[in-house]
Image (cartoon, rainbow, N blue to C red; front, side, top):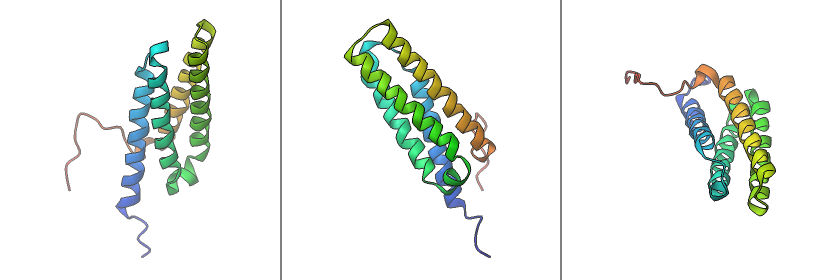
Length: 130
C-alpha cells in the first residue's frame, strides 16, 4: 500500500482553499475608493499568496492549474489597475479597478467550483469529529 489516502495533503489543500475563500470575501467586500487602494492591494497580495500556495499542492498543479493561472492573471490586472488609480484617480481608473475586481471574483469562483466538494465551504453544521 502506497498510502495514497494520507489525510495531510488534503488538509493542506483545504486550508489553502479556505484562504482563497477568505481572500475572495475580502476582495468582494473592499470598497473601491482612493482611500481603499492600499487595502485593495493588500487583499490582492493576500489572495496571490493563497492561490500560489494552492498551486504548489499536487492537486493544484495537476487539476486546477489553468484556474489558478487565470486567478493570478486577474490579480495582476487588479494590482496594476489599483496602482494606476492611486497614481491618477479618476472615473476611468476607478472603473478599471471595479472591472478587474469583478474578474478576480469570477475567476476565483471558477477555481473554487473546480475544487468543488473536495473542500466544501464551512457550513453551519459542523462535521462530527472522528
